[in-house]
Length: 139
Image 1 (spheres, rainbow, N blue to C red):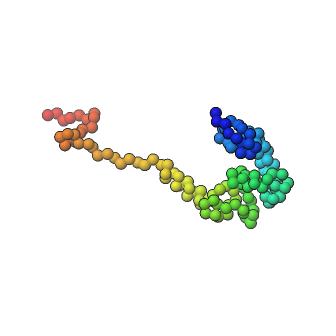
Image 2: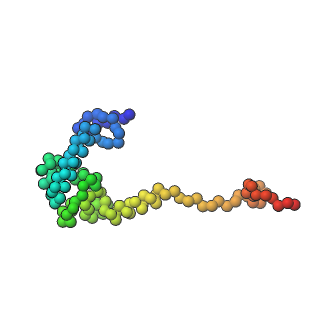
Image 3: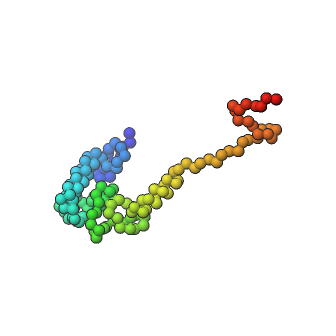
């Protein structure tokens, strides 16, 4: 078991894949639910409005957008940029084009390369070896 300090509150906790402790994780989930419910009732709200009404920081709201937990609905309200090409996006870190390219690149790197067929090896006399299981012709 690995112990770490919570990046949010500084408390020590048993690390389980998240950089924040369970207490901060619960608080974060409650904040997300507030934002989600506010946006459900006020779909055209800006980040500033959502932050003021829900008392959730703008930084957290932007993180929810980057995590694709919420999405910008209005075309003229785009404020996120693709981290690869800079195109305007509604949520996440990458635009659809860059996401596809990154996926193809990763797939090609992770795909096992096919081994070429080996030529039959010659024995000491220079003749090809026969495959096991084949019958020799009667003499």
